[in-house]
Figure 1 (cartoon, one colour):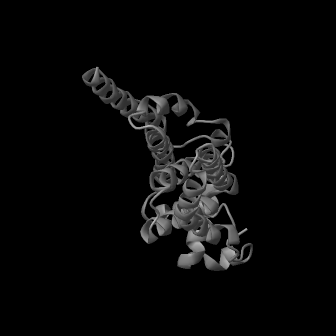
Figure 2 (cartoon, helix red, strand yellow; figure 1 turned 30 degrees about the horizontal axis):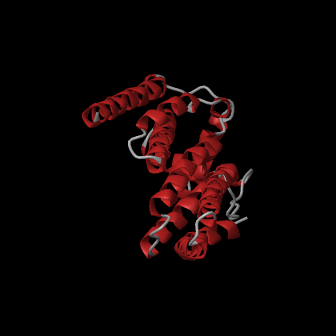
Figure 3 (tube, helix red, strand yellow; figure 1 turned 60 degrees about the vertical axis):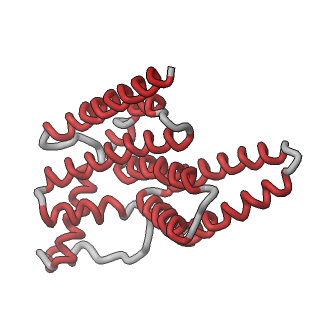
Length: 235
């Protein structure tokens, strides 16, 4: 029975990797990814890159000026701008979207395996949502934020009872990155953690030693709450 389970889990991994390749294929073989707002993101990132590097500054300064507000939706401008310093706009977009697909697919698998070990099979049906409607509309930051929220929730689950300084700092960085992608994904990750924590709390309250368990859990979860504060302050 155990051998059969290991064999099944191994083949589920093969299926998972095969589907990731299938999902990457349309991005990699086509020169452009046709979407609603995608070209705007690519153009805005190029303008930002050119202004920072002083390229065509007199022309751009007629229409644009720097906004130093630390607001959400900055993620794609920064990443696409950096990519366009090295690659063509077309290749930059393909690399950027490949990053999204990998982040989504492996994030789902990471989360499922933290909920229940050897649960790659549970991640496979979720992959159908990689090319969701809002991605095709060109909502790149939103799409990245949803993919990143899987990593945020999964990382919290992995260390929820053993948060040290290192784990707290990493979680803090994940929260901040998620915020700068899009607030919806950030809220999705925070709410997911709250619901899991609430469920664990209710379960603990049903036990005879509820007071001791609750105190232990609250003490263990306090660093993760502190890790959330910097991202919350950006709102």
